[in-house]
Length: 286
Image 1: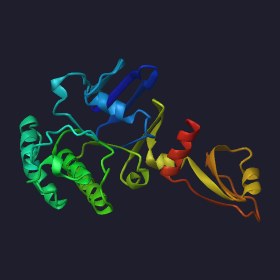
Image 2: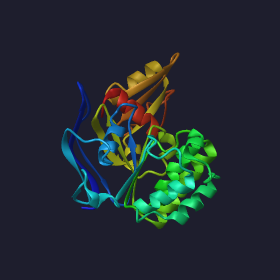
Image 3: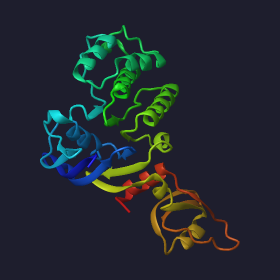
Image 4: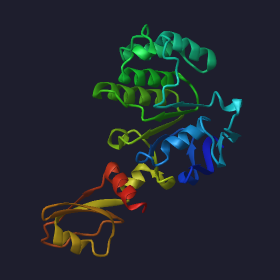
């Protein structure tokens, strides 16, 4: 099976379960949003997939190959992370050349081309780069590796709006020409909502849901109006949360929308992915 399969993975830190019996798959040829609050378990799972730490139990398979300490998966997956794993004393251009020696699938010319688009000075040492340009360097490396699976862990930290837009544009163009599996772990959900196809939502070390974005957008809606009217309308509904301002109230409803009462002061609208994420993690699931 062409996929990253996570099978019954558990990871504990002393008395805290960072991951608890997690099982799901990242299938080939999709762009995923891997979503969760800080401390939800995203980075722990990514580090296990990348062989930086090991699970207490369970296993990761990449194209049916065990991922743990297996050189056969080296050219299958790359993880861009927040951690600085590069020799800070080397110049960017020299880091590119070293990466080119370690990965057969690294496109050195493409790396310099992308660096140019971001105005990344390849003659600077990594430690001399700003936080934003260190992130740009890592993004450039990830975009230049022609591996089947690429994971971006909080990829746009420190980037300004123009650079974030450029990254998303380059990512989509790369995916169109080199279809592979892209996994974006982020809390900036509104920014990625239009480019991801499928969502995996993790909270407190457990998977709350996995579904297509289009399906999730049809799962629920919001109702806005005077608090008493909202409460009356929602009496028999599956409510995942409320927002209130004075006498006004917004209810977030899961399920098929029913007609609003005649002559009511209520209005209904679609629930965006960001709000669905916030309310589900507040509630702890559907």
